Figure 1 (cartoon, rainbow, N blue to C red):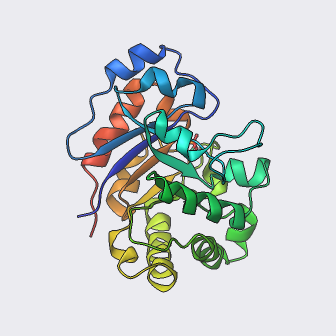
Figure 2 (figure 1 turned 135 degrees about the horizontal axis):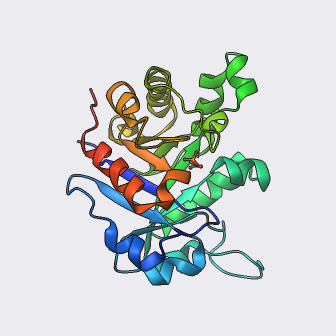
Length: 243
Ligand code: PGA
């Protein structure tokens, strides 16, 4: 059975209730993996309390790269995961498929589990090319070995907009993603890779996504900043229906 995930992407935000209260309030169900991705300076504060992810990392181990954070440093701070290729990194900071592929390779080399984000924008979806677009993103990030990589399908038009994809739409894309994994990634990746959905996930829309979406969890932005909401989403991950 694939691992099930609830991943909280705080982005450049902090929970209003405070970090200590937030962490103390979370009690993830045993059947799921709950991962928190704070901004880099807060990793140390959460270390030992929750499973941690970086929101990004450099494609180099060390060197003269002002402002960058190496995946080696992330691991030293206690992170086990790293989010890579988030659409905000791709669109606001110009990250290319080639750069993301280098980051993914290095993250795996140093023992981090990458959470690779893929997803189309509205124009691509409306042109009917979403499946081809995400398949290309998957192809260019293909890892070499069989170490775990988590995939997050995050349609850009659904991120932070309050407009989530429906369960049926997600199920259709998950089928395409698994086909791309079978085609471009090492043998067995299509079966073993956990696929998460991200994009305006809230406790109010997880019933449809969870029952219809054929997903293994959620990557959550806005709604993860309140421990009560994120806890409800964690409970939803424990109830997911997958074929
Ligand atoms: P959102 O963000 O839940 O606020 O839409 C999701 C994400 O960007 O990972």
